[in-house]
Image (cartoon, one colour):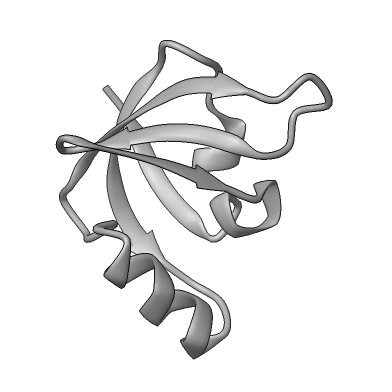
Length: 75
């Protein structure tokens, strides 16, 4: 399954699961990334890291390593 780090700008997806260190998973929850939540990749930095995503009405910047812990289904 793809992760949030695999998506290109303009692609949308739905969060399936979060993985990784419990502190990282807690941080992602605090940022609003929950299972079933729709997300959209807005932009990538010139070297591909960080990734800017939209979750609800919020915009987040995630390190690519963090985004790789968010499994998604493309929509």
